[in-house]
Structure formats: C-alpha cells, structure tokens
Image (cartoon, rainbow, N blue to C red; front, side, top):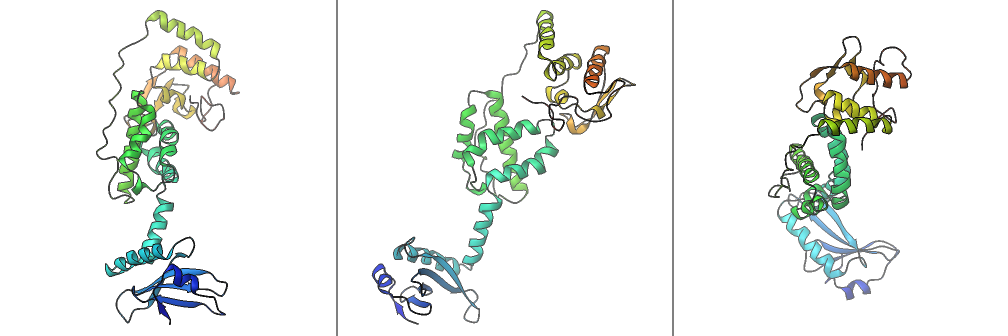
Length: 314
C-alpha cells in the first residue's frame, strides 16, 4: 500500500479511482487516508491491541474538509497514545456516546424524579421537581453530569440568590441528585462538593392574630373551590400545605371522623391520625356533595383537584 507524508498538499493531490484507496503516513504508524471512488477523503487510524497476532481495528477520525490534515494527525497521535496505554479507541468512543445520552442532565432529571424523589420526598416531590426544571435545566441543558462544574451550579443558583427558602431548596435537590448519581455509579464524584450552600431562611415566628385569622377565613368565601375550602381546612387542621392540598378521600373515615395521613405523605415518614372537628367535617361534606356524593364521602380520589388526576398547586 502506498505511503506518503499525509499533508494538505498530498491529500489534495490524490485522485479517486475505481476502488477505495488507502494511503498510509510514513511517519505515524496506523495514520492513513482513505479515498473513495466518489472522491471522499477520510482520515483513519488503524491499530492492534494485544500484539501482532491480534486483529487490526480501524477508527474513523473524520472527513477531509471538516478536518485538516494537521488536525487529523493530532487526533491520530492522541489515539496512538491511548492504544499504547492499552485503551481501545472504539470502546472509548462508545462510552463517550453512552455518557452523552444516558447522563445528559435534562433527561436524567426525569429519571431521578421517578426513581428517587417520588419515594424519598413524596410530600415535596412536585415542588422540588419544578425547581430543577425551572432553574437547573435551563443552565445545564443536556450537558452530561460528569461535565457539570461548580461554576454551572453557581449559575443555576444565581437567579434565586435573594430568595432564601427557594435557594436552600434548589441547592438541596441538586445536591441530592448528584449524590444519587454517585450512588448509581453514574458519577465518580459529585460536582457540588465544595460549593458553599445558601444561608438557611430565617425561622418564622410571626403568626396571625384572631382578627387577621377572621379576615382570612372570610376572604376564602370569595375564592370558592378549590382554594377557598383548602385554606379553611388548613386553618381547621393545622396541617402542612401539601398534606392538605394532596388529601385523598381514602385517608378519611366519615364514621369515625378521623384523618389518617400515611407515612408516604408525612414529612417525618410516620403515619399520623388526626380527629376532624365538626367544622372540618362540614367542609368535607360540602366538597363531597360538590363531587356528586350526597351521603358520606367518596372512597378514593383527590379531595382538591381541577383535573381529577393531580392535586392543586400554585
């Protein structure tokens, strides 16, 4: 097979023939240029792993035009170094392609939400998932996890710098995502390590007085379903917002007037039994009646929903 010093001038001079031609560089073993009958000129690198008896493998570097001869030579030198270290360029290429697809941040968020957040953070799942979509995805895009840097993370946190609670929650869910990726062996090390977290929001010690609570209660009659009765049940039960917003009829017992919050929805992962006051029962009766249940309460289904499939939010 012909050998020559593969340069721009040499590649330009080669003319196509009826069959593929292979021209090998006379200085860098394995570096070559394939010329097709249609005139395409493609840089290649041929190598063996395991000595002379092992089969030759061929790696396509790229087309002439998209690459210059000098760029192709530098790439071939990198490939030669990998082979010398016992690495297969084809396998490295496949692994790189896998990482680009499997570890792209945007689709990885959905995998993390489905496999981790739903189980570990059921009470706040929808909220923290929305934080990732709103703030992290626009910054990270489809960048593979192993290419995300501290600078990227700080850029995602920048828009919420003045919102203490949102910043703390966003930082927490990004940190959990990265730690989960390490647990799944998709990352060797979390890039959030060493990033200083935002200051926690100040504790809330302000409570409504009786007059203010009365005004809030009266204003709920203007809101109507679902937010009016939702706010009234928050006042009557003292439960957390998401606990009431995602309330399911299956958690309620009309006869005993008891609400049993399951462990999957409680913040501490422990089931909680709460008696319902006469006013709370009246509110639930009104909602059941609105949903077409004239006597008793439905056996299942969301108490507060505009779609029938998801609980209210916002």
